[in-house]
Length: 297
Image (cartoon, rainbow, N blue to C red; front, side, top):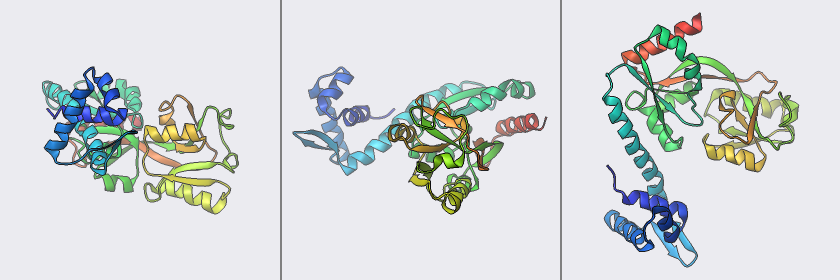
């Protein structure tokens, strides 16, 4: 379904050497080198700089690395979609899930949803939460994935060209390493953050986060704000490794085993719910109507 040389290329890039990639692939280093050489020849670009110290990706290689990961995952997902197509069309809600977009809220609501719509079934579709995947998946909701659970606001919905169904307001919390001085607390006062680095998504990502940012700048400038560009597992790793504090929500409590998500005594929250296509299918409309009825009970 895709050029298998791409997988070899990714393995070499991750391993940093032909020999290590060969061990992981259970083939000879010569075979690995041949596959990479053929891929470079077919594409007409140089993917690696080869030196006595090892391999490094060229700019072309770095670009292909990002796209190849998405292509391979997309092809794997296509197999799932083909299997889904065998099921009765229109009765399956495909729920995208990743560490930052867990489907737990729907699992908890499922018995009540099933009572309203007994013919609708769930299909969990895992995906890797990268900027490229997030952009493509949210822009194309309804094609391969119907709904994704997560935080949002109007700005993000406009940028991603999708719609949002609010289930609750999630208080903005702080995630800290279990070894952090604040980890023994069950609730933080904002003064507890004085002298700390607080990691926030960059300005204009969310007006709710910007409201928190402005509150800190105006009233609590003892807190040092550190910007970042995208919520990913790497950001949670960075939080744990650097001992910085990360703005989080309670739904992410299980993203990283060495982080603790702690509520803060401030009046800042963000909508949490389901992202879906601006033109949802009839099944998705029934599904959302069922959830709305449950919330109104």
